[in-house]
Image (cartoon, rainbow, N blue to C red; front, side, top):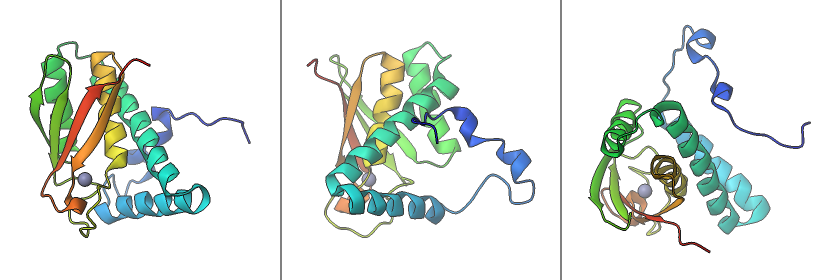
Length: 172
Ligand SMILES: [Zn+2]
């Protein structure tokens, strides 16, 4: 086995070719089954905190690759955000709304009908760590500054939408 695995868009394959009868879509629970069993597997081996970190890292890799694949040709920032919003709706990931963009780069967004959490049992804790990384990855690509995102409201916390605060990462 190679020492390293690096994701590339090519790994997603030609779904149309490979699934000529079953097609490109599948139920949301399949995605969630993958996500939350993966979290348990990581948690069993490395602890819950690492599971959260790794989901966030994976989301960031997804977000930056998605930006490169679909959005990086759009140079205008607001056009790019609009295209991101449309992409999330078209692919049924969720309904993104931009609540505010401050001069210091702080951005507040909401996602409703979120792929990861809408309809989950309310546990009082946020669960969209993958989305935190995903949003940060896209914004990092768009603004060419490293972003972090934190989910403050989540269906699993009892809210109707997920709300994320994204900020330019503090220089260390
Ligand atoms: Zn959430």
